[in-house]
Every structure is written in C-alpha cells, then in structure tokens.
Amino acid sequence: MPEGIKKLFEKLKGYWNDLGKSQKIRIFVMAGIVVAAVVLTLALTLRVEYVPLFDT
Image (cartoon, rainbow, N blue to C red; front, side, top):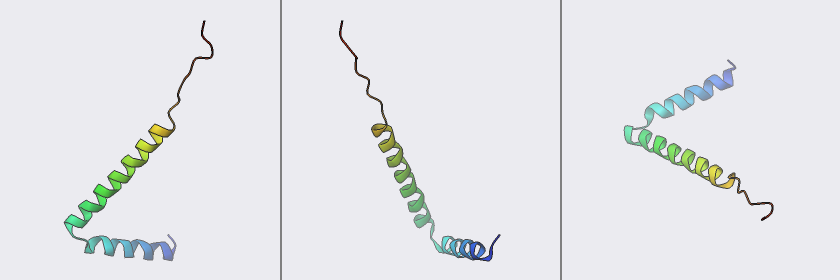
C-alpha cells in the first residue's frame, strides 16, 4: 500500500480510538439517518407514475 494511504489510515485509526463511546454511537446514528434519508429520497423521486394512454 502506498505510504500516503498508510499514514491516512493510521491518522484515522488514532482519531477513532480517541473518541468516546457516546461519540462513536452518535457517528453511527447520524450515518444511519443520512443513509435512510438518501434511500427515502431516491425511492420517492424515482418512482414511476403510470397514467392511462386512452379511455374506452
């Protein structure tokens, strides 16, 4: 692995280990809310609305 990526991972690992338990839980909860919001937005905006072509 390139040296720059290793340094980045080590820095992130150190930051993660310095966080408290409640901060880690908040990060996961916020990430879950963001994922749910994106999924909900995509589901509502990409829904196909069918209409009849003609009436008999």
